[in-house]
Length: 195
Image (cartoon, rainbow, N blue to C red; front, side, top):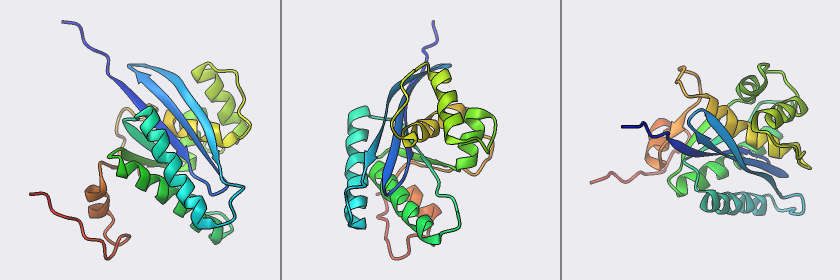
């Protein structure tokens, strides 16, 4: 009997409150194909809560359109400005909530891990990551925003993680598993026990 090659669709998201990048790939055995990449712009919105609403709604639309098996997302990184970190954390949380609302498992990767997976260097520039992705996935188009290739990089990074290495990435299969692992982050939320 022939072995069937497993296929899975991976969506990657580079969260942001001005521009959110995304990429979707199809993994067929050892081959990976580009399905889509793009951005969701929020620069025209002044209200930070409307930006979060747009992130949620657009993430749900993308999930419903591409039906990914998993969502891979870039973790916020600490820079010099704590306010930027807080905004990125909110954007990431909203995208995670959108995925979990559709029962899509979520895995988080640090920016350094993503760059390392794609280029071999954790200090690679956005341009170097984009160029490597063009070679890996055989596409010529250069997106208007590098946030699109950043989102794609997260998806490809997840595809490269076929063997669990005991790293710091974490996968959740739904609200219950997220809440049980993050009790200090979700104080006051009750999870209904399954009967």
